[in-house]
Image: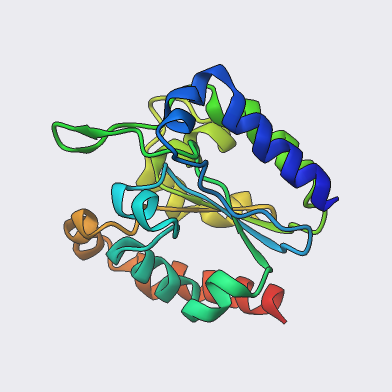
Length: 194
């Protein structure tokens, strides 16, 4: 199975869609493991993550680990947590933050990697791109409502808002999230990390 993971990694690097990154010495950034029980699907690596080769290596990642109730050691080294962003490369800066992940990237690579992770029981969808893609939402569906009604998507999916510091206002306006949703997330994560 390890050879299959390595083969997919090579194929991602050599894909014409990613060749500019490969030529610049930038590898795809994701963590996949056959032992994974939890899969986190977020937007795309940020510039810092790409430069350091460490996913969720920023204040958003600190908040995400806090919401999940896991240590840095558990998050990065337990092999029970896999991380597959909607795009495995930093998409660049836009006017108000990072550019969105490239369209159809996840559809091309996620199923192949998921197939090699049969033990995944919980997929944590972080932010609107992942939530909309995996839950097949309509454009009129509001992320706040989806997150508030997270129970509808369990046991397979757990939708979350992005833990970015930019969402501080949203968190203040929606105190039910940290009061009701975060404890349930921590409970699910704890059960699967045993």
